[in-house]
Length: 271
Image (tube, rainbow, N blue to C red):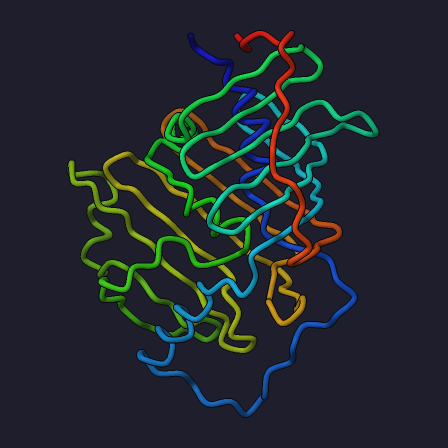
């Protein structure tokens, strides 16, 4: 049975892309005399940012979503056990309209306004992106981490006035963006030269003509972990163009909350 795409969109862009917090703490100011990082130092810095120094995460987030066919704004909560699962609710104003649960291989969703539910393999969601997406992709977005890092990949290094750029492809490979049938995924990571924060991740999948651009803005120190205050995501593939803006409220780290979903027996499968 085919499930309406707006259920997936409503869930995905409120729950899967949670990556930030507001905090009264100020961002750490770098030493203005810091030396320029070389290739090895830049790569070590990038990989250090993939580490998660906590096991539970909670946040509230405002979501603005727009595609070629619809737009929406709503509030979401996320309760997460890192590398395991996350769950929460979606609401418009004071009314909770839906709940969700995402595990390493599945997604569950209830629409409280229509008394219906769906449950699918996580790979079902990859159609929205036009390419395969796994749980670790969402995990990294949730926490503002570098997506798709691979210790077995040799990353190319360059620096501009503002960024250390580490890429999983060479310049000549850019000619393949039009697609030549291979399954390569090309990723660029932009480390801010001044703050040493990860500001941007750019992903291209030539064979599927897909690009995903993620901008993490205004990183703030929260219990020693630098979380983006806002995240802006742009996804372009042959069937659609999608923009998501995330604006976060309170965040709690290592205050674990129950992660589950209740599907009433009276609910029917969403059509």
